[in-house]
Length: 384
Ligand code: PMP
Image 1 (tube, rainbow, N blue to C red):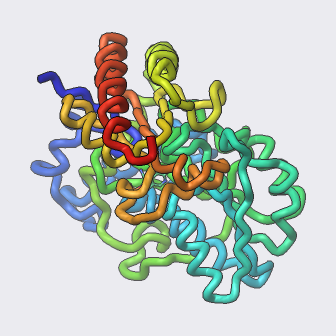
Image 2: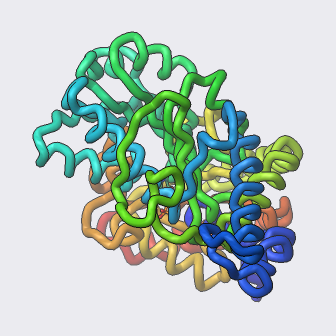
């Protein structure tokens, strides 16, 4: 049985070209980037080369605006906690959309315990931020507002330029989690008016264990990890040179190939959406057109996402679900609830994310497996 991997929003394979580029940093080049000898300098050079490549992907003002972290979770924590705590004298409020990743929502909830006000900004039924609500939600005391560039679960792309304008009319800094969108849609931190932006290597066909935070020149933040003072004192700890070098090369390839690859994937995406929606009682989640090029998310009534995932796996097809068990809790996805679905509706979701190995030939295979899966599960479902 041919295995079809369709969970690229959870993890991408390391591109073989990235692997070939970064492998020497696991073997020949093993110095510590802080060491002054030649082995250390080589490692330092690898980190700096990667910084330039990642900066280019998002059109940052210069390389020094990028800080490497262990991944998107840490970058989100650093952006939110680091900025809120450093700028608390200017206001003790933070805001985020209701569909942010937990690595944004949970640091904000934690800040609440320290006396900050946390406002959740609602989204509409397609997942788009409600601009009027956003404008009402932020005040001059809001030190950081977080809006993801695109949602990993429903694929909806936010109008960041407009959001930036609204946020900056009253509030201080805009943080954008671009984990799901980087390398898939163009991102320009300068044109879009972004103050802080999170990136993840693992979502770019780079190795796990690296992420980055863009910090606009002039934005003040404090460290959340203290130690030897690496990364301008904002992220202490010996750099993960292999993963960082890989992330840099992954960013360079993503930038070079993004237009062609996204055009290719949009055709497959649209064909797969159309095919899946021929299944009875199936519905698209997220926005139909303001959608990541590789993102297909649907829900089926009367069945449960974890069972869909496990049944699809029996066909050799690996997909994801926004519902309960993917997040190891019994609660349905906060994203699907935020777009207005009822609990029982939010449970039957299937998230299919395409990538470099996906072809148009996969579409009928996935449609057939999904059709049989839904039929089988509905026969067993007491709700049907
Ligand atoms: N933000 C978004 C939008 C995500 O999809 C993820 C997970 N891929 C994260 C943040 C956290 O990434 P990680 O678990 O790699 O730190």
